[in-house]
Image (tube, rainbow, N blue to C red; front, top):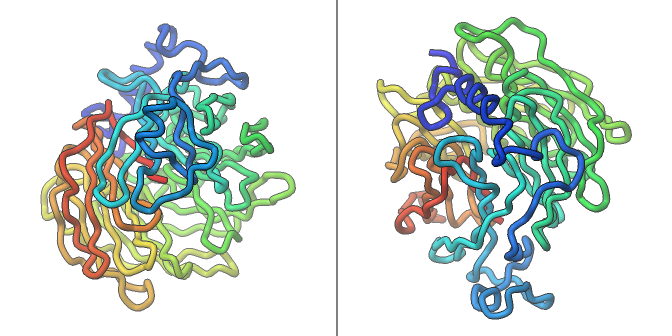
Length: 417
């Protein structure tokens, strides 16, 4: 089965959703969002929690504004942002804003940042002041939002169709995005205000030829290596991870290496071990994970043998791997099996040992994320329209539900800060 037949949109294929969004593009709900470089999006009236130092829930309730002198608290409320599809049936109206308790995992809703169309993936600037979202539409875009007052700073064209992932370069000067529909990756400059400038590069994955069942390239992710020396793009359609060197003065990408997975694997998501010498690849189509060796000097990625996801013989589509901050455990989100696989990380990152799988408590975990301290794991449950939370045992890596899921329309991305 091809990626487009997976039903990655809560029962719809990506191609179906592109048609759905194209048909709805003229409606009032979608007007003025995609492809704009102005500040035409409206925002909700309630203020955003400051990313580095979230205020207490009580202060937000009583004053309606953030306290300028609020101090960070490891056990107090922390910001959580939730991506959704605004053009899907039952979808949201923008980026969900919430807080979570760092100890209990309890989530509390704090409103919505409106004026952002189909924000299906989110990333925050290293300084914590600006949030970025893809606009996963036929005419794709990337949007910047100032978190202090939730002001939409503008949207730039991503140069391709259906951008599904983005990341900020560690320098904070460049935004990188992956266009799934057209199989391309883009670079935008980040201005001092956090707003985005005009695109400086667009690279289309024109070779190798698409894998079995694929109609073309499908860029699914673009990230920077831990050492900051290279940018890696994962393409599900060509079964390839491309390594680029970013010219930090011009914002252009130069390819330096390619890593091929086995034909038909459908690589979707790459996660680095904190040591920087190994990375873990989730293959969506053949339901496997792969440990890859990484050479920081050359940027070369060398995939190892495919490994089991622990989900048995049933239909399953791995979504994303995350690794604990200390590098001891890794977790995989399984769509179809609706579970989280736990791996022990061995040999300084060179091996993954499958330990167990636990039910995720919902349907179709599209994306997972760890809290900055690694104490909580959040799962965006797309078909359940909810976000699940698990406590992570620091000694064993075991997962324990932190309570009932938090309802959120077509939740496809959860970003805890």
